[in-house]
Image (cartoon, rainbow over all chains, first blue to last red; front, side, top):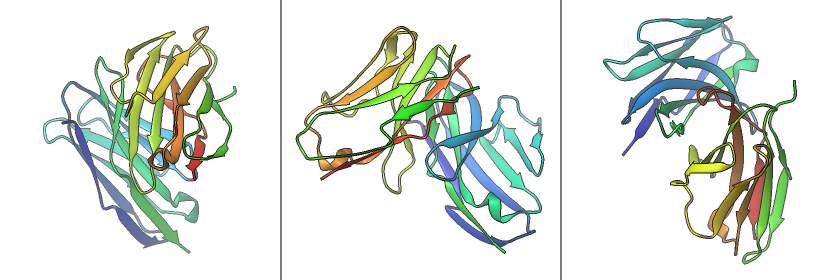
Length: 111
Length: 112
């Protein structure tokens, strides 16, 4: 059975801290790993990672994929209260084109 | 440009009634997906359309659930004889290339 596991499930930090969110996966026919930010209802796309070891960066957010160890991390530096959200990772299944999601990490940034 | 839109945003229905949820994908996106998110759960895949055909219906939880897509654009998810366990947020996503999927705001369905 395809499975994506995120950790921690919940994280509370102070503004300005750096956080690392983890995502491990066990899926057949893996194609890519995607990260989303969900604040209210609609998950918003952050990154898609297909190759190992190549960091993707957008402002204070960055992410990398390790296809040998089957995991990805999402880093957020100099956190702000606006970063508070649920962060979802998902494995894209080749052929089926469907996303298998983890449970999400609820990140709370306190001022 | 316009993103994925869904309607209604909220729907409250009585157990046993049928409901229809609508999704308008991003213009030009050929792939369309339905997911649902139950309270405290991750997103669960329901069905995928490429054009008007559905190559993967594996996630539909029962035969009370069906979906169609017409004109390669709008899709409707229908739930017949709703049950309380159908209460969830139903999310639609679309994709141009079958890789990056962009989500709509969802429909919150409450079955009383």
